[in-house]
Length: 360
Image (cartoon, rainbow, N blue to C red):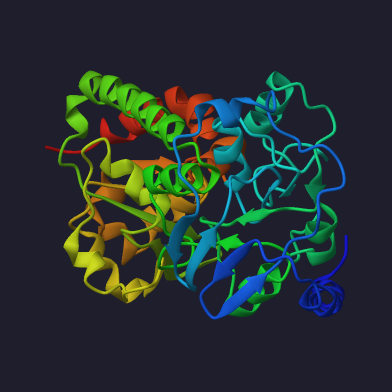
């Protein structure tokens, strides 16, 4: 694996090379005349013509994001994704990326892919996907070698510097406002718009919403229950880590009728996807009907036995949902369309089990 420092040095060299190119494909705010490497082989996509036949977009398409806006002059054929999960959304729309980042969490083998990603690639007839081994940082050389004409990172934490470097390779679509915070619906919509597949995106969202509606109808007890997504470290219970209401994991739970208590959300700074609390602030969690997080069951047990944390009603009632860290399910809760189909039954079952312990 190339380390980040080497990759950035390589990228700087790439920047020089690309600056000299003259055939501009896109315009990005503050960076006009951006070019992409010419495609030297056949684009990798499902059945090639499917995107052309189902496109509903009139190009150029403009997408606004945290670093400005990106104008996509024509329908992309060679798609690269960086950061966690973005390849899943592309695959769910029927397009195979010519390169994508390895998953850095929940992977059970040496493939760098989660099981639902592997499953979809197999379904699309792809046996040797181009997976970037970039869990230590973006591998700019690998991205450039993929000859992309678009780089998608709507769910990511890329910095301005990383965005600028990637933009020298191909147009980049970053996150809308805040790093690592986007709803699944918005994630699909942005990706579909960039690829000229908005109708397919709408159909995908509708299908997911239908499934959620069925699950929600089967569990009316979900409605109105307050949760906090929070982690406990049994070796150090003095500090807690909570995800913000805007985090993708939390936004997905709202679809089932769950809510996030204001007692916690009022302390989360705008533009942040998380909050660190000291154990002394445990009373902020008193309003939560249940707690959910990546903490182990032993960590929850240790918290429940703690003199201060043990006063949290959800811990007293064992109204907790423990998602074992490092498992496929734990990775799935940053909900992509593929992860949704693969794990929704297991997830809802866990939710129902934890909520069943809430004291009325």
